[in-house]
Length: 323
Ligand code: SF4
Image 1: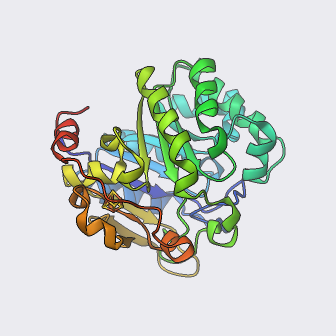
Image 2: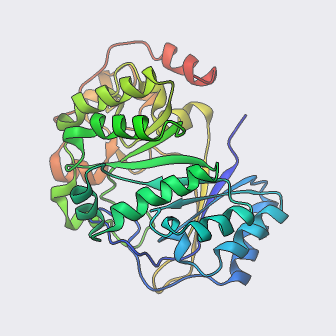
């Protein structure tokens, strides 16, 4: 069955200031009336699951009402959050009471100084960890969202091993290789100005493999975005873009734009805006691989990608059969 979820930015304010933020914050948010209009728009489009994002959605004064409105339309609400405000147990209870049962919490390291360096907010690691524990205590579904970056890549498997050990209730992980482009078609990702934080593909090879193997051995599910298939040997069916290509999925987003009208986008062909190298022409996986980001290619070239000579059939079957 095709996913029918959509994303909606409800604020661009954020209490973190991550060095790689792909949707840089500014002081703008939408009011309750606009949230309602957008939810009704999505409802007419048959959306059954809405992910409130930002900025940081818990910085919006309207989040509680937004959750209630979504539930009233029979749209399941989720949030993508840095988890900092979830350190307040009473606030988490109010989210829960307003219908929120599923959170994606972004955490990029289990080492406090590294985490706070990446978010540039001292003390926020502890708050995010408290937020994770609060959600687990209230029996909410918690997923972990992690960027792959130059700081965490040397110990990515240890980091994920820590989460698996400390929070066995967490079953699903999402990894995003950094986006140096302009996700909202307006502001460029901060990774572009902080290029030091972008991990090279060649440097993520071993740790990514160890991490994927670790997750699989613990029966966890996971998705990996913006990593070409030549760096996912044996785990290609966990690549977000490949799954979308094979399942012919699109996803919808509404962005709050700085000094412009809000942007309604449907991402249909995720290969658009990506780069393929000459080697891709002879690669057996070229039809199910999205390649690399154009901005990564601009920065580092495409010498790191290499043709893969194995049949895509097993990967396609695994995805179609829901593995
Ligand atoms: S060589 Fe190109 S098509 Fe093949 S897996 Fe790598 S990036 Fe994808």
